[in-house]
Length: 339
Image: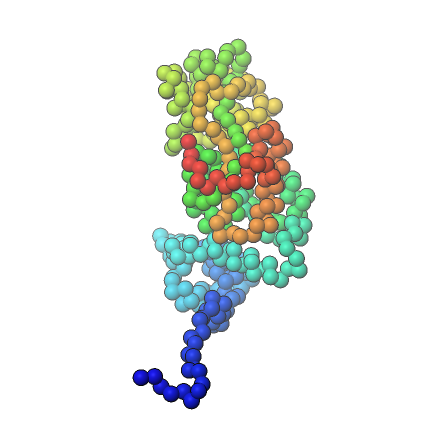
């Protein structure tokens, strides 16, 4: 039986939804956001003393801050192992997201959008030493002129992997032969070449008849896989653990080696070397940009991408560079798999 309502409509009971904004505001109300600045210092330094020096606190004050952070996150964050401090897995996961949050927060107090002239951020780019040889000096020159307040940090390593992005790397320059979980954009194309210290033979004859200077890699080297498939035997006369040593050891000798065209183009100007294209089919060596997935500063990305393109253009033919406004660079290479 329906209740009488004296001619009035029944009073509706409406449950107001808790909005995302309300939820976030209430959860942050009890948090001292200054703690995040100290947390970033701890994550970068992996040391209470180093973190204290970085933000201008005393060591006891930073130790107190760390205790507060541990309560806030429910995690130890920084622990002692084998006589030194190390970050917990939870702390390592915080590096990328925290860096993005602090940069966005800093942007709230700037009068306008991204301005490379006045921006004071540290830009970290990870690449192998060979790519640094090609692009490094040009990057430094362009950025010192167009972003005088920024700091450029070049992290060079042969062990290029996604975990570097959690360490505060803004961009990773990665060969197409290496996989990544994250979106990648083609920067420029490269290829294998044969280098020799003396003239007089074709590339295929060099490879079959001369002593080789090889790079010792944990990954199979595509040119030597190609030689194996062609049934060509080679004499591994000298092995090196740094691929940039190959041209120096080949120069002026009767030895040969294989390397990237981009790097060798720069080196043949100063060394007695001869260079020819690798004579057999072999996977390409294109270089991709992998952006930090926690960074959403699209204006900075667009600007830094143009800087990388211009640095590459100082050393490589324009046809090998994938410019942003080119038709073939409009689509991400996220789904492309290495050959």
